Length: 144
Image (tube, rainbow, N blue to C red; front, top):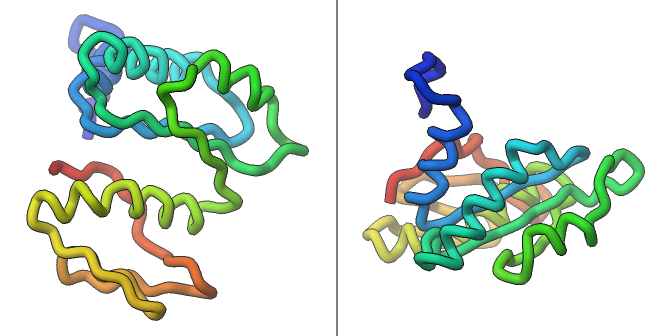
């Protein structure tokens, strides 16, 4: 988590620095494509081009066309072809997709992830499925 206190530089610079250190970068868009979110995505794209870090770039947007204030194709062209592009209907589907992205990395670092039709178990914690998808607590920060 980030300390909200001012440390002599704008907070966005601190966030951008964290993006550069990331192994995986996931950018989410719902109804708006905010300038700071775009900035973080551009930082990730530039760092990927220069240093291949973050190693994976993902772009998710909510499939909510009637409330969207940006054009998906325009945003896709801004972010470029290095991003893996996908959509989500709701938060439950998004969490499942993020878990699928993280699973190989978790397993590579000794965290057991198994799936059945009733639950996904992550490191001994059962994550119950509801109606074919899963419901998990919000992921705030994972250190791998």
